[in-house]
Length: 183
Ligand SMILES: Cc1cc2nc3c(=O)[nH]c(=O)nc-3n(C[C@H](O)[C@H](O)[C@H](O)COP(=O)(O)O)c2cc1C
Image 1 (cartoon, rainbow, N blue to C red):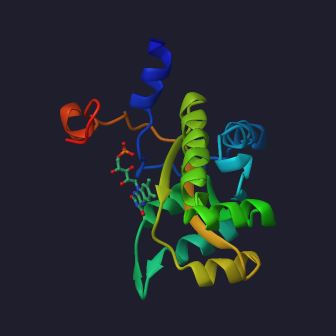
Image 2: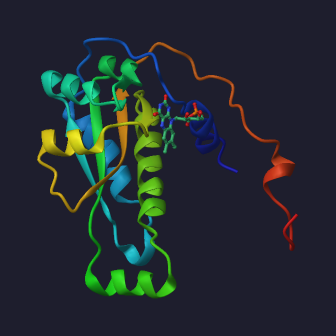
């Protein structure tokens, strides 16, 4: 087993303590995007788009919209160097029909794979990430001129930290698998 890959899995954690006022070079962000691009997806549909917000003023506006109703969440993201907004992009018609026929839409799953590759690549080059699932979709779409027929799936806070990875809290291994029959 490649220990380096395993160490990377342990090293990635959801950072809620970014170092302020740090700029990320765009070539580093591009490296993460390249990793995201290489992710697998159903029928290779690649139903994702990454909108990188590295303009500090715009980034602060996005953070203003990390809300449910009037309550703000995830305000630590204002110290991140960039916020990445990940949208679901339409699949071509054949793929859409195929997935409808199966009664499945794999877009969320596909985007999850891609976002994970983004986050792992970021960790590998010394950046910190936190996936954000709480946001006012309507307001962020308007702010970033995202077309009405696109959906925001998640945001990613990306930046620097001096925090060490935390011990992972996970279900015991025996609880997440069985061989040959569901248990
Ligand atoms: C889809 C998704 C949405 C999440 N939304 C948030 C969020 O809004 N705020 C937050 O602080 N963490 C969020 N997280 C991070 C999880 O809380 C975190 O992954 C989990 O507790 C495991 O911790 P770890 O990532 O440090 O290993 C989200 C993670 C995922 C995958």
